[in-house]
Length: 384
Ligand SMILES: C[S@@+](CC[C@H](N)C(=O)[O-])C[C@H]1O[C@@H](n2cnc3c(N)ncnc32)[C@H](O)[C@@H]1O
Image 1 (cartoon, rainbow, N blue to C red):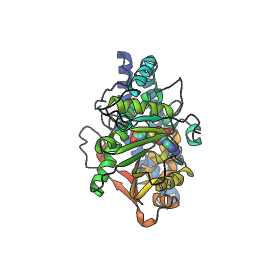
Image 2: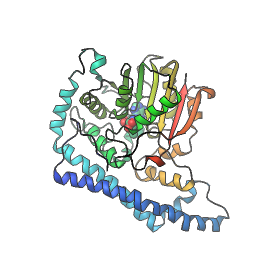
Image 3: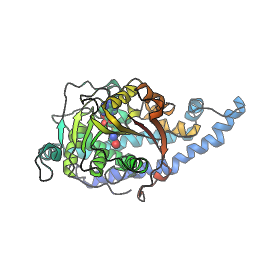
Image 4: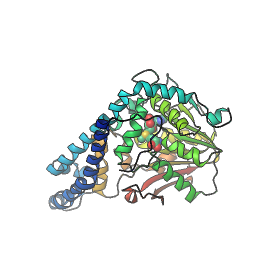
């Protein structure tokens, strides 16, 4: 697995802890690389022919194959192992985090008080603005998305950062290192899109919504060092971590705890708004509200770009992607498979002519990213 770049906000690992993380990485690589293709064979050789014999036609959507697929013993084995690997993943990153938590909290407080660069201005220092009164949306309270205990928003102690610590290493393991050494793939991908489609754009005010640990926000702040960059999220512990991590990486970003459905920024505050794999973790009613809020926040001529995970093209690919919804608490992602993003943007007030929904495969140097060449991303772009 490609190396994860160490930084001050990650705990060290004892030999046993490292061995456990390595095991989870190897198990997940085996499950996705060796066993998961077997589930596709099950479909082609058993489920699809049986369906055709019964109905006289091929299945038209993933719901039609859900029952026979989930009754197949090979699929059941892969699915049970996949679920267990996800639980093991969190266990393997929680252990070192708990062991070093008091030191991580001290480091976070130190880093967050530190200035970056020569100037003492906020812009160079980065800021953190939390709102303990913010109501956490039900779509985060109702279930722990991808089984992360406590989700993105739960504080287990005062000034907690643990949700961020475990998410950072957790997504590295989840993707087998494919997100890059700083979990930078999503930011790099959307930046590549901007550079390819809008090379003239030099945004001065950038907002990253659902920024979590700021892994993608850092990419934008580095790409446009003159810009004032904001990252918002509903989760306080991920934001504290994001702030400390950004300082540790020498990048100045302004983080604030806000719901993207209704923020406190003034109309027209940004000329670029981005999000990375956020929309599929919201809800049916929140989605158009978030897009409407983006429209309000964009200055005339401004651009919004949302990067979303591919949900598959064929019936079986869609079914396999939706495993995450049924077994990994990605409850809304299933709805995203069939959603018309252009229509959602129009509900948010964008005229149809200003909205574009694209599939995008970035031309990045992804030598170390083992399966990204098969990865197409969905991008919702709209300008004001
Ligand atoms: C999968 S993480 C995305 C992390 C990050 N954007 C990245 O590039 O890896 C989704 C994040 O979106 C945040 N989020 C979801 N709904 C939100 C909302 N309505 N307002 C603000 N943040 C939200 C969650 O708290 C979570 O941190």
